[in-house]
Length: 367
Image (cartoon, rainbow, N blue to C red):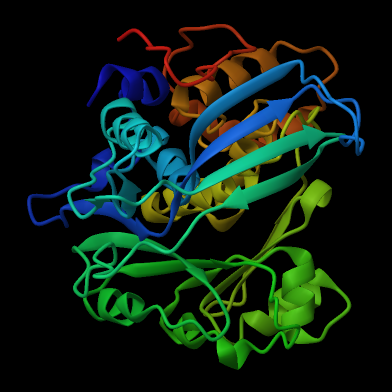
């Protein structure tokens, strides 16, 4: 494990007590497009046409599917990513940041000669973001998605209506637990039948608006119950209201409120939520604890800029837990909700708040 990754995991292995010599080679597999994200923060408002706007902060980091991969790796999961990388400086930077900085396995990824890296410029203001992206499909052969994915405890798939993800069925057949999220349906049909891989998924994690549109309901909790008829576990994120989950097999439900924070940049928060939930699920935690942990990691992420840069690890969780217990205004019931962290977090080594983002390309962190 590299020095940079250890700064976040503090050597914590959430699956340490479950590992055996017969384990799969990785804990989580995922595939998708890696972007170079350039994030501007500290904007008072949206840019005004015909004017120049100065941002008080900026950062660069691998984005796209790299947000999820980084979040998983910083929580101590052995993460394997299959993706295409450009052979430009952006692609080299993203590869090095993920492989060397985060300890992510890129053995199933490839560098594409003559292909430039996709780029996203994100502007964060008023707790929201505006993005401009540019990129092209990687030229054939599209080797970033293995026809036979590696053996893994879990895989994360981003479902798109009408776009088959053939690797998902193969992974599920080999015993991999599939966690899926979904984006906005640009077709406007919101047809669950168009998400062909949903039948292979063990957990589905849409946001409230997506869940209600797919189920034709007007309540996110009703949407979660409807989705639990289609997948073993339905988790609906409720934004500032937290998250709600229904276990379709047992009928168990859980709801956990969100942690109130001052949001700097919401980029990647949904990916961090999924990573936290995957971690708790593979570790065998109770459903409510998984929701609470996922919500906590997402809340910690929006307090920093960038997607992958902002993903918290165990060091950040430990520092927050030490800090929040020392605050006199905390409700005892709220603290008890996170009492399960006592048995998980490493001894506090740094004080809250922590700054964890490397500002831009060209700076090297120390081991």
